[in-house]
Amino acid sequence: MARFLHLSDLHVVPEGQLVSGRLDTGRLLQEAVDTLRTRLDAIGPLDAILVTGDLSEDGSAESYAIARRELERLGQRMLVVPGNHDGRETFRSAFSDLPEIRPTGLIDWVSDIADTRVIGLDTLIEGKGGGILRAESLAFLDQALAETGGRQVVVALHHPPLRTGIRFMDAIGLENPDALRLVLERHQAPIWVLSGHVHGVYHGLLGRHPVVTAPSCCSAFALDLRQEAPVGFMTGPTGCGLIDTGPGGVWTELPLRHGDGPFAF
Ligand SMILES: [Fe+2]
Image 1: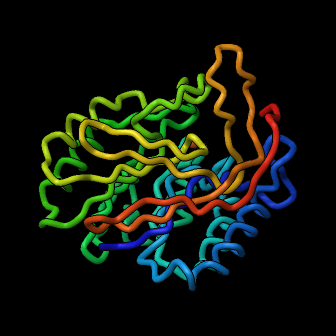
Image 2: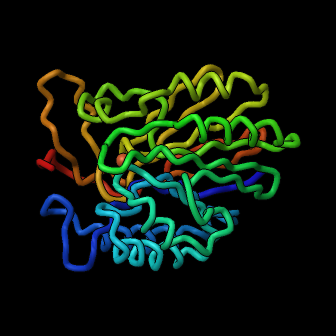
Image 3: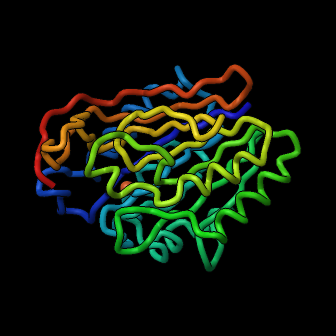
């Protein structure tokens, strides 16, 4: 088995800026890391932290420098996939020293850690909120799944292949979840699909494979499924996930803080 802290949607901005005029996301990440550091003795040891996208709000180099500085205080190996707020090339530059990050092309990767194969997929369409798995990524995934050698498998992508029922989030979801399902269906072993994007914990199935989304470190979206639900964000609950990938293992939430709202974007 392998154990990962599953963080998502940090939305870091350059120093002195706020997201939606309200969220000091650099400080919120700093506080999250402070809290997690106090819990590491209780929840450790870990094999890596896995961040499922939207590390930055604006794709700026400065935001990645802040995100990386804070994440490094956890003292763990880092695995990162981009989200819709990320800029592919600035993201790549910020993490170019990680062995998984290729110098060009989509940011798809595979990493074998302990007895677990983690496959990261790039769903970013720059300038858009929604995401897509391109034929190249699906072929990469198929190949990586064909060579697992009996390992546990985690697939990490920012946009989850499920719907929350929150209209403004489903409108910017993954365009082709069925294409992902068709690739996973060719493989017998259970595959954990881990995502972010929806700033909350949602658990579903893609075919027979479990899908779970991590909460964000900085904000949340109210579970208001009405047509006229206000479009906006809550300042919590925030949190992250902890996964043990072994047989009988679990994904569980580590709550960070409560919040209020909704506030306009
Ligand atoms: Fe996102």
